[in-house]
Each structure stands twice: as structure tokens, then as C-alpha cells.
Length: 121
Image (cartoon, rainbow, N blue to C red; front, top):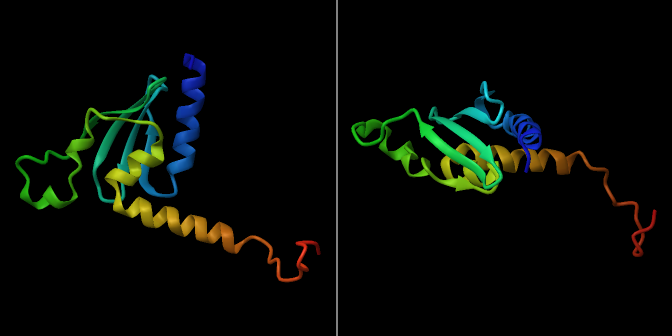
């Protein structure tokens, strides 16, 4: 994947996830994102040919007992094939938002109740 393709993909990722995160920002190099998940944790991500790499997280887990249950420090340093795989691992809210989005899109499809047994209208 060349640099221009990575820049285009970062923009597409930002657009794809904005419905399920508090905020997403494309950073100066245009190959990195700052993502704030609904649970409040901030992640810096960089896209490369290998995938989406988690550079850092803003919540320090080790010394914060209040954040331990929602902390995803184990994601730092990992590389994910897709943004969905990353968000599924770090954000319980993402799973709910994704399911609701799919349900909404499915309910917007036209009904096929007028079809005969051959699937023809």
C-alpha cells in the first residue's frame, strides 16, 4: 500500500467509525488518527501496510483503580487488520452501536412480503 492509498484509507476509516466514537481526528501526517471511544479512552493509531497499529492510549491503567475495568492498555503496541477488530476489542459500546446501525439499515430495506415462492415480484 503506497502513501497516497494509506492517506485515503485513513480518511475512509474516520468516516466509517464516527457514528460509534466520541471523536475521531486525522493527525498531521495524514496516516494517523486520534480516536476517543465512548468509554472515554483516547487512542493514537497509525495505519500502515501491516494494518492499524495502536501507538498509545491516554489512560494510565497501572495506577488508576477507578479505570481498571474500562482500561485497554493491552491494546497498545498491537496491530489490527481492521478498525472494526480494534474497536470490538477496546469498546463495548462499539459492539452495541454497530449492531444498532446494522439493524437500522436492515429495517430500511424494502419488504419482500409481496414475492412469490420463486423470489419474483
